[in-house]
Structure formats: structure tokens, C-alpha cells
Length: 501
Image (tube, rainbow, N blue to C red; front, side, top):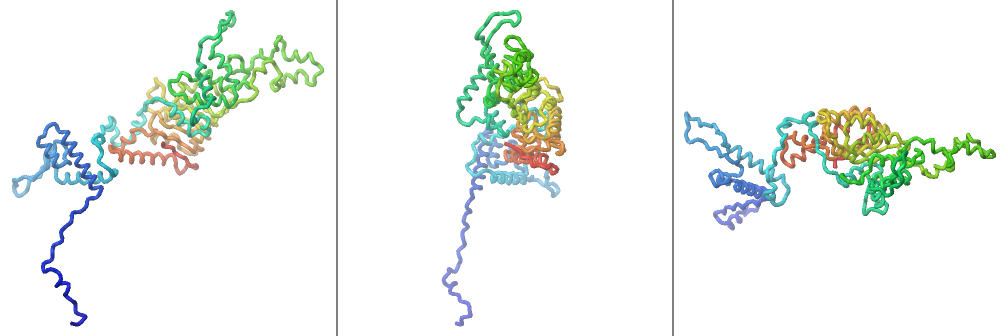
């Protein structure tokens, strides 16, 4: 046989009738198994929810994609005029709708996390929000501004977190066990409000009853503490939780911030101008009269009078004054019921040159009044969790005063670098950020860091109409993206870092 002809030996070796290949069953993937298990679990839960085993329960068992009270539509057996009646009654579901539900259920199951089916307690339907119907068509500015966030109980951990963005937050950080100095300062704070009498002297018609208390004696020594001790005392006071009995009063706060070497501090009095009695010696003569008794000195009496403030031996009261000056740059005032009145008193002190203020969780009745007493050269401002005072007007409840206060703050603080408005009393919406940051050339032009922790209320998520956890995450991302477009506008020259968590 020629070699170019094909051979048929392979046909002779094979059987005459070829065997049909058996179809092997396709192996299900992990996602298919998870989807089927979740579908069966939902079907079993629906069967358990039925009160009695009627025909509807049996139909739900056969097709888990039916809702209670629904049946599958079947074509009519009688055809009139060659055309079937396709009217579907209420509660009857077309098979095409069942197929669509199956496909949607399959896609939802594949998007889930790999693993066993969740327990029945996880599959309870979410309750609809009470104001979902009000903002279902979109987020309105009025609805967003009227949603007032209720304050919560403040702990030491919350206060420590409010100091995390400040440049000198190391003074308020409490890493590890407290030191001996911390225990001593906490003991001072505990006894500053103790009004129990230690000694009761004679009663005079001029000064009344002479009574000494622990709190009175400690408060008189506050202006004479060293600089680092007063700084640590303010830090310990700022971290006291809500409801603590050791919080400083306004008078003691002013005494702590006062500089005795500058203010001419009197015994037990608040900082004020130097009294004329302090220029008298022990025998009642003035300094000028005492200087006249020594004509051989190099300096005249007039020159000595002008230099008495710089000479440690200028008067007998100089022995009681502090020898070092004290200047305050960082002012922590947390959980204060009325910081506006306190800031007015602090601004009168010569020892104050404030560049950063933390008013975390304080009660602010009028935002515009607070802005009026803030220093113009402020570089860091913490308004984390501030509260709106009771008895406010309707304008404040609607958020209009909050928006006006933010606008005034942006116009006044031109060198502000860090602003913390976390846990704001009203949700952070575009209406408020626009008033705070636009136009960028005149509204906070030096801003570098902006904290918006817990500032996204439920109103933004309700507006998207989401009821699934994944949809809530996507909605929150969209809201954050919209807010970032406002904060990092193209016309703003400096990059602003936004803190979300």
C-alpha cells in the first residue's frame, strides 16, 4: 500500500458502535454553595415566621423569593377570542419577576464575604428611619440644619483624643502610669474646692470673721507655682471627666494663669493693678522718704523710684513676688459651661499670649460672641463636641446661628492652621462648609488641618435611600467625597488635610 494513503487501523481497533460520553456533573464553586445555603436559610426563616402551615407557607417553601401573601401567576385555561387575558391581580407575581429576584439574590450573595451563612439574628430587617420619608427625595439644607445631635457623656478618653491634633499635645498625653507630680496635682485639684474651716480667728468690724480654709490657702499659692507645674495643673484639669468635683472654678483658673511678678498680686485677691499700699514700708513711710535718709548713694531718690520694679529689694512686698515670668500660649478649657465670660477675664491678663485654645465639649450659647473674644492670632482651635446651651432661640435650633458663627470665625482667624469641629452639634453638610471656607482668599486662608470626626449625621445617609450595610458605606464615601471637593477647592492655595476618624 502506498504511504500517502490514509490508514484505517485505528477504526478497526475501536468498537463498531461508539460509546456516548457521560456528562459529568459540574462541581459547584464556593460562592454557589454560599448562595444556596443562604437561600435555604432565608426560606427556613420565612417558614418559621408563618403562624400556621397553610398553602401560602407551602408556596414559600417551594419558592423562597415570594413574599407573604404573594402567588405565582398562571396563564388562564380559557382563551376568549384567541387572546389570553393577561391581567394580573393584586398579590400575583409574574414568573419574570421571580426570575429577576433570583438573579438579584444571586448577585447579592456573591458580593458577600466568604464563609458560612450568617445566623438568623443577623438577618433581621432594619427598621425604617422615622425621617426617611421626609428626606427621601434628597438632602435639603433646612432638614440637615434642623437635625440637632444630642450630647453624650464625656470620658477622659474622649478628652485625650480632643488634644491629639494640637502641636503641644504631649503635655496632656498620659502614657503609662501617672507620675508622682500627677498625683500631687490631682490632690491639689481635689482640695481647691474644700471650704471646710481650718482656723477661725477674731472677728473685726472692718474685715469680718477671719477664717482660713484649705481651698483658700491653696488658691492663694496658685500664682506662685513654677511654669511647668502650672502647665501640668491645667492639663490635669482639662482631662477631668464630666461630673468631676475637682474641676477648677473661674477664679482659680484666672489665678493659675496670672503672673504674680507682673500683676502685682495681693494676698487672696484676683490679679489687678498694683495697690498703692504696696509702695509703703513696714513703718508706714514711702520709698521716696526712705531713700532721702541716704544722700550718699549713687542714685537719686527719683531714679530709685523708677527702678524699684526691677530691683528685687525695691520694697518689702517684692519678697512675696515670683522671680520668674509666666506666659501662657496653650489654653485648655474643656467641659466649661460658659467659656465666653472666662475668656473675657483671661484676655485682661498681661501674662497671656494665647496661640491655641481647646474648648472641647464646652457649652456655647452664642457662637458669634465666642468668636468676638477669640484672639486674632490664634493658630489652633478645638471645638470638638461643643454643645448648644439650653433655652436657645429657634434660629439656633435651625442651625442658622451655627452657620453665622462659622462664617464669622473664618473671617476673623486668618492665621488659623488647625480647626477641630468633630462631633459638631449639627451635621456637617455642604451648607456649613461653604460658609466656613468660601471664598478661600478671605476665609481661613492658612488652614492646614481640619478634623471632621463623627460629624456626618444620619441625614446624609437617609437621603441616599440606602438600607444595606454596603450601600451605607458607599453613601458615606460619596458624602465625604463631596465635602472634600469643598475643602480642597482649586482656588485654595494650600493643601488641607481632613481627619475623618
